[in-house]
Length: 331
Length: 194
Image 1 (cartoon, rainbow over the protein chains, first blue to last red):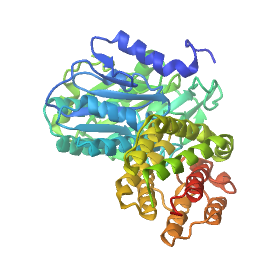
Image 2: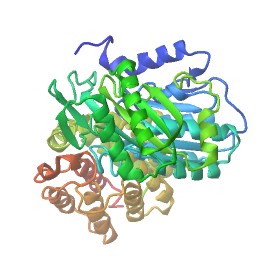
Image 3: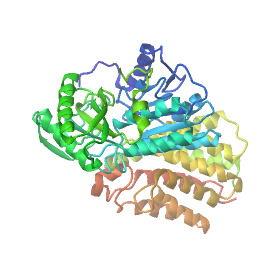
Image 4: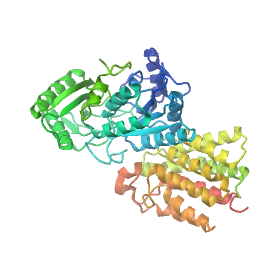
């Protein structure tokens, strides 16, 4: 293992300090916690809290700020944060309008966030949750009952974040979130596994000429291994899978996110984006929104994921395009 | 009868058993999970014991709540929220003073949090028979031991152990074992005898 770190066990602490120092214009660390919160707490709006294990940077702290999240709760690498941490984030960001938790669908995350929800309700804080399960690759994965939550979670942050800024109530945001999650689907591919620093070696082995379809963001098994293919063939396979799941028709309106998993250069992501463009044009889809970059990574995994959102409600595109002041959403 | 004092004694004894058997719990977990149940549980009960040292409790409710917060903030993984939920629900029923009602509330908390049912090789496979025995006022060491042993032939379908599938068959569930320490401590204390 070759990494620019000190002690593996100090990574979370040191990363959070570095993050909050680098982005001190937008965020700060909630004292004595592993929670990153907005610097400018905004009165009167529902607070959005997300988080999960670390190793997926810039998720989720990179989306804290005006227009997206109010807090990100950061666990150890690939490990859910504990309920007390989530509870602190809830208490610190609630302005009286309530708090919505956005949870990726992993058994540990769901349990820990739901426990925090119970603690907050016992204190009289209105809290609800949206569980994101956008990864269509496999059902019932290593750490998940049902489908996994991956890059589509960032789209949920963006749309709910903009809607919260507009003043939607907690029940309205909860309902919007549940409708939204049904229209967001992701599928990924890996060409090299991530190395968890505490483990010291890659989570799985892929030969130099091999790739795996449907790998999860913690290296959970996908659905098929194959010889590495040209970008356009990979795009074709992923789009085929998404098409089966969406059952779209020509003229439907979509948004797309090409997401790098950590060690795949933007150069390759743009090549892939170009292939996605061609094939979605062939399908006759209207692509109203596009995003590219490393938004939901898996440490140093090489590979990428493709997320599609079916824009079934007019407001969604406005929410996607609404201005934000966060570190990682980009222009 | 449940008192503040015997509740603290019970949970202290539970904590000591977990610490004593830390290596064994991790060994069980390494066979079917990720091998950290012993160290995680030990970290949790250590925090609980420290809280016991530094806190004056008024009633059992406070003891259970403090235990819940210590465990859920220090154990981590799935066991943290599961034990945390159990003690949080037990706190809510502590006024009844009826240990069978209290343990049964704890079981409901675990079931709700973990969405598990009996027979899936989890900690509730110990909690369910213990609850039943308590309702009949017939909890014995044998009931607990048999419940633990009964998890051996089960195949895990919930939690980390579920992804080793058939390989989980033949081993004791580590969560069942740590729960057994809780009930052994209960049996050895004076809550059931007074």
